[in-house]
Amino acid sequence: MIEYRPLRIALLGAGSVGSQVAKLILENKAELAARVGAELELAGVFVRDKKASRDYEIPAELLTTDSDSLILGADIVIEVMGGIEPARTLILQALNSGSDVITANKALLANHGTELFDAAEQVGAQLYFEAAVAGAIPIIRPLRESLAGDKVKRIMGIVNGSTNFILDRMDSAGLTLEQAMAEATNLGYLEADPALDVEGYDAAQKAAILASLAFHTEVPLEKVYREGITKITREQMAAAKRDGYVIKLLAICEAIPADELGGEAGISVRVYPAMVPLEHPLASVRGSFNAVFVEAEAAGSLMFYGAGAGGIQTASAVMGDLVSAAKRHVAGGPGLADSVHADLEVLSISRVKTRYQITLEVSDQPGVLAQIANVFAKHNVSIETVEQSAKMIEAETVAWLEIGTHQASDKDLAAVVAELSSSESVERITSVIRVEGE
Ligand code: NDP
Ligand code: HSE
Image (cartoon, rainbow, N blue to C red; front, side, top):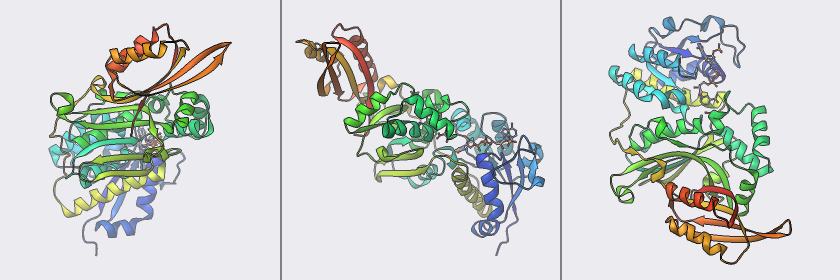
């Protein structure tokens, strides 16, 4: 029997995600009430244009352009508008009046998370954000709750679906970056500003959110190292495949112990394309799917996989937050803030070590290999593998060298590349790419 009063839900936004959230609340009323122990009453839906056509036809009387009246008196506010303003102001308004807030807005959380979480804590409200990272995939709650008693060592995620689609088409169909991007655009996968996807900004926002939860540390977005996929070529993709790898845009969050840093422990949060061995679970994440691979001290390796975007899929994550928030209202008690007690240093990329693969076109002369090996040694970069092949180009034999390194710092590797670029023995550096997941 349902004894608790109906809970008033304010929905801000009715686009791809919001219209599906409205549908699920309105069509599953009885089932939701039974699960929560209170009716969930959709009090109204804030939009820009009440006449716009929507994926789900929301009853006209629920649509409003008056956010103030809607937020006033709402028990739970769901923000699925996107962008920084007015979303930020409306969320603060809702939290300051004691409502719990659910948001799917990774850009807002990555840029203004501290302000929003502080506002929630002040009044004992809670901010939920399962949908902000990797759409339908449950990853926030596992980090926030299920792994709260463990120690996360490393997260490697494919958290941007459109770039995974682009790289997958380059890998599986041999398309150029431009051709694959055109396909992604036609399918509506890219953000209105494609740079958010292809330059890695979207993945960096998600990495900042994951790292702050995993390592109990505030992670300002500007401390996340970011490279996009715009320099990846079809040739690099084919070469990686020949060697048993695939190139993926990875969001990596890593705890680096004190003994490796020669000082205090820190964390590294970084986004870049990297070669991943075909046998790694992330290598088989195809198309626009997302996956997050978590390594924790006690749990070992865990893989979370599924749809990282899509209106109805993302609405599933929002609904999970809605049921949690509503149950907390019924049970009573203040919201629980996330812990940021660890306050670890977010390390600059120059202090992080990874393996690299460098491909060079060199003149096929005695002593060239030794000269090149010397450059690596001079800058403290240890070579792990060398493969050489020869080709005739315009009646001249050109040697191709594929050099795999042991773990090397970004700074040392950059020095090697700079010196090789000006070396007379090196015709061309055709690829410099990191190797992850081995
Ligand atoms: P849409 O652009 O499809 O929808 C945005 C909605 O917000 C529209 O209904 C729009 O109103 C409303 N809106 C925007 N600005 C205003 C404003 N200034 N005043 C009033 N209403 C406004 O966005 P999505 O549904 O795709 O995304 C929503 C959020 O979910 C974003 O934060 C996004 O990053 C996140 N997200 C989206 C995913 C997806 O697959 N789409 C996946 C994961 C997260 P109107 O309809 O009248 O224009
Ligand atoms: N642009 C994002 C992606 C949408 O491609 O994954 C989901 O956040």
